Length: 475
Ligand code: NOJ
Ligand code: NOJ
Image 1 (spheres, helix red, strand yellow):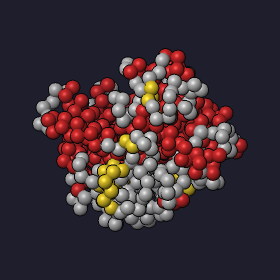
Image 2 (cartoon, helix red, strand yellow; image 1 turned 180 degrees about the horizontal axis):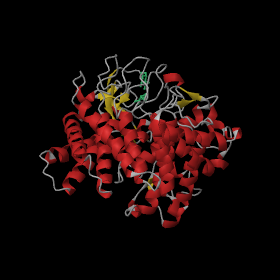
Image 3 (cartoon, helix red, strand yellow; image 1 turned 135 degrees about the horizontal axis):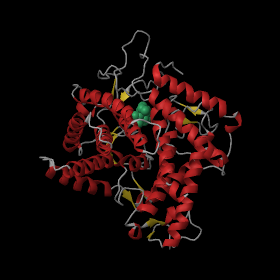
Image 4 (cartoon, helix red, strand yellow; image 1 turned 120 degrees about the vertical axis):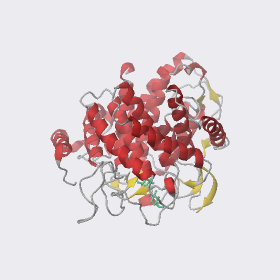
């Protein structure tokens, strides 16, 4: 662990002290029972460790340049793998979680802290949007001094600007609700530039979320769709003249059509990629990136959200694969551990903390929609998905989609919460006593693997914990 100075360092010290004091060694290898006691504690730790990776205090190597304010390193790890960079994708998702945390009922946080974090992030983002590089705004990552990363890498990647627009729009909404106007002008500037870029490039093929293949990606398209929809809604509500309104509407329509093509009714899952360009290293289109996309896009409609039966079916197919494939998933008293895709070899192709947390978040969020979605009576559910949750689903066969009556929706709610709790217990089981979350955990031993302290792992864990908190009125 690096030494951190200042108030943040002190907060980290306090929470780590709390962890070491209250955590018994037996919590490693525990079953689901201690989840409720562990969650608040791990939430504090994850938050402190996440903040520690924003504007980090140490240079990459002794004597190297300092990090600019607003830099969010993907992890503190500087070798094997070297994640001491600012990825546009990771940093946008992390800042979105930061806004979500401040918008939650976590009362001890002061809004001025969010303003200061966002001020740094927006200033940096405006600068990075204008840095010249071969991939333009499709540049996936930057050095910590804000300069372009010139190492060979998978470029361009088009999800970053869309994800940044989503998180900055979320901040704009928050700033209004809280009458905090300090960075609004800058935020609007950053969003408009990102949306303009999305409009120009959405039909181009870039590399995927895992930085491996050039193709048409479900994940990239879905976050682009969410960014455009949310941007359009925001600017329309504010009666702002947007000269790109017509382009936006037309792109939204086309992206929705493109997304529909990913469904494979025969196999019962939404395909992560279509139209591969290069390189064809991957021979599957079954990929958790589809579920990560749904959680990142946070869409409120039914299609391409947790209420989409095609997505629910995909959740089941992925679950079946990882249940059969990972040795640790043979422990039936815990929920499943989820990884990226069949045949993944990156640092062992193990389960990932962030993906596992996203699946827990999926089940919690669906549970919430059952209680709060006005159109829930009209929603269809995947039978393949229901089969794992209800003892007598009203289904003819696995492939069908059905509507549910009030009683079944009630049973489904409880089953979803149980399922998500099991998945979080899985994460608990593989979290070391100091609360650090790496990128992966070993599929056989369950021990942490790959980059230590992955910022995105903390963010995804916090999102799942917040999703569980939103259910409190019904638990
Ligand atoms: C680094 C990427 O970020 C990771 O996702 C990928 O699997 C490896 N490179 C191998 O291409
Ligand atoms: C590898 C992941 O595949 C990619 O999505 C991520 O951006 C980088 N690691 C940094 O966390």
